[in-house]
Image (tube, rainbow, N blue to C red; front, side):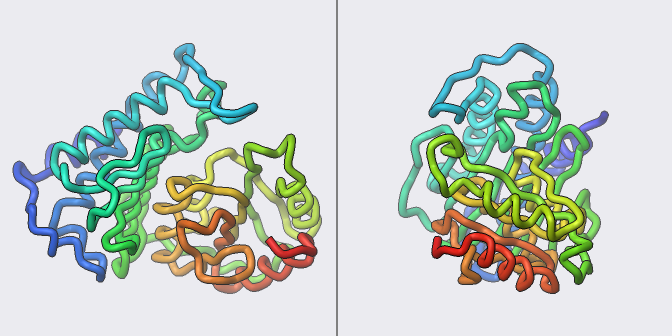
Length: 293
């Protein structure tokens, strides 16, 4: 499959980035600084590398009992960081596999170079690259790229959400019994009782189906595109949710924490859905959990 975003976006990137930080304003004006094009190009380059190497044997290291990292994570992250740093050395970068850089900067990139590492390590072709940009603590740009299908999801605050350049919107499903939901499980599933198994069991019999694909960022992008009606998960990190949650919001969906409060990147639990299902999903989760999280 031709990775059209890799070739087109790199070709169209300006020779010299506009260094004026006023281009990245709170109203989501990221295009003026070339940030959108940079994020797309970086995601496409990293995604192509991951796709090209999916069927190779992988070097796997364990960060926990079942939490792993591969050479694919590290190389894809290196590519993204190098592209961002080359154009914006003064920007902060929060990436999953590297120490945080330039803490306190106005602009902060939040990067998951390979969301779906366990899938990738097993040659299971469900994973993505996720890149988001914060300006003064506000998410203004989100990119999620699925290299296996060459699907580039892009959202800019106040400007909508898009898939390969076409506008997308959350589903219009209004009944829980007709919903297709997505979720995932935390890496401490073996040792913590707060592991989502109780919520999964309760919701599975209330909706049409629940999918567990292994990539939170991609699940969120699919909510934005109307493929899933809703998503919830516990114990996520900023790089898991930064881009995907902006996609859902810009596609007309609702994103909150597990109690229905304002979602922030510091909130480890997230609930995202279309506006019709979201309150029903929240209520079902609260009843199933039967405790304050």
